[in-house]
Length: 309
Image (cartoon, rainbow, N blue to C red; front, side):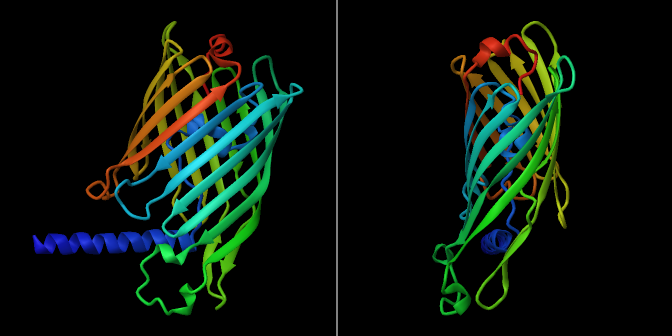
C-alpha cells in the first residue's frame, strides 16, 4: 500500500510538472470534442455559413479531479451579411495550471457560389492574444527564486485564415487560427513560452438513412510543428431533426460519447464525455464538455436541407 501511495504521489508530481511545462513552453490552443458544433472557433471560413445569425457558448473541463488541468470557455457569434459576406466574433478563455490565455478575434468570410449547391468560403480572423502566468497559483519549492517573483503578462496580435468548402451534404476545410509564431522571454532572457501556428483539416459527409435518420461521419486533424498529428474521428446520428447521438475517437488519447437535443427550434444543447486512453484513466473522472448553440433560422430552414453542420 505504501509503495502504491508513493507511486501515485510521484505520478501526480510528474503530471503537474508536465502541465506547467506545457503551459510555459508550448502554448497551444485547446481541443474540442464537439468541434462539429463549434467550427468557427477553428475555421474562420465557416463564418456566416449558417445563415443570418448563429451563436454558441461552450464550456470544457478536462481531466476532472486533477489540479491545474485544462479548463476552457468559448463564445462565438456570426451571421451572413449581403448574401456573400460573413461577419463574426470569437472569444476564448483557456486555463492550464498557473497560465491563462484570453483571445478575442474578429472574423470575416467571403462566400463564392461555385455551383447550384456548392459554396467556397474564404475567411480571415484578426485579434489579440493575452497570455499571463500567475506563479502564486503554483507550489514553488524555492519561493525566493527571482524567476518566480514577477508574474508574466503579454499581449500579442493574432492573424489567421481559413477555407471552408461545402455542399448540401458535405464539407471540407483547412485553416490556421494564427499564422504568427512568437516567443516570450523573462527578465533573465530565458524563454518562458512559445506560440506555434496550428493547422487544421476537417471534413464531413451527411448520409440519409431514412426520412427521419441522418448519419454524419466527420474528421478533424491538427498539425503543429514538432508535435505528432492529432486526429479526431466522430460519427453522429440525427434522429427526427431533434436528437443527436454519437461517438468520437481521438487517436491515442480518448474515446468520447456525444448527445444533443434541440430544446426549441432555435436552441441546441450538446454534451460530450471523454474517457482517457493515455494512462490517466485511473487518476481522473474524465473530461466534460457542454455547448449551447442558437440559430435564428432554426429547424424550419434546416429541415429543408440534409446538412446538419
